[in-house]
Length: 313
Image (cartoon, rainbow, N blue to C red; front, side):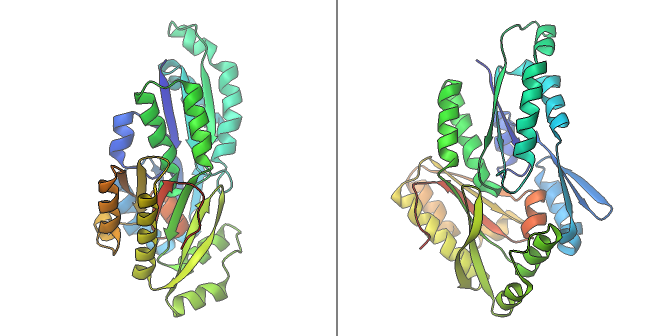
C-alpha cells in the first residue's frame, strides 16, 4: 500500500526531511503590510523575510491557511492518484483553523476521489486520516517523523493511525520567547488578551522570560526565569533529563526564530545533543517557519519530544 504524509508549513522540520520522505506541505500565506510570502518551508526565504519584515511589523501580520477547497484540490489533482492512504497531520486545532479545514476537505475528497483514480487506471479505494497533532512549531514534527519511520518499516495504516493518535496525547513542546512585547502585541492583534501590557512591561523591565509549554492543545507558562540565556539553558537541561529518563520515540526536535548557529551557541544545547547521541535519539533542527516567527517573534527557541506525563522542574 502506498502511504502518503502531509503536514502544514507551520511544522518545523528540516527541508531535508521533507525531501527525503516526500512529505507534502499545505502552505500558509503570510501577509505583512504589502509584503506577501507563501511559506513552503524554504529556510533561506524565511530568513530573508524575517530580516526584511517580521522584526519591524510582524505583530500585525495576517496568516492565511489553505481553505477546505484548496486542500481538496491538492488531493484530487495528485495525492489521490499517488497514494492509497494519506495521513494529514496538522498544527493544533486550538490555535489554527487548518485542522478544521482539512477535516472538512476530507469529506469532499472521499466523495470525489474515484474519478481521478479511475482516470489513472486505479479502481481501488482511497483513504485518508486527518490528525490533530495538538501541538505547535517543532513539537508538531514528532508525529510525521514517527509516521515516516513506521511507513519505512512496512506498518499498516491502522497501526500507524493508532500510534500517531496516542503520540499526540504525549507530545510536549517547550518554548522560550526573546521578546515579550512582541508576543503581547501579536496576541492583541489576533484578539487574544491573555498577555497583558503590564505583564509584558514587567517581564521586559526585569528581564524575566517565561518557559511556555504546549501540551494537548493547551499553551501556558510553566516557569519564569531571569534572563533569556538562563531560561533557554534551563529548558535545554530539562529536555536533557527527559531524554535520559526515556522518551516515547527516538526523536527530539528543535527550532529557532533565526539562524541556527545562534541557537547552537546557546548554553545547554551541546549537552542536550550529547545526551541524545548517547541514547541514539535523532535530533532534527530547523529554522522556525515564517508562520511561527510572526506569532512569537525572532529569536524564540523551541524543543519538542514525546514522553510520559511529567512536570517541568
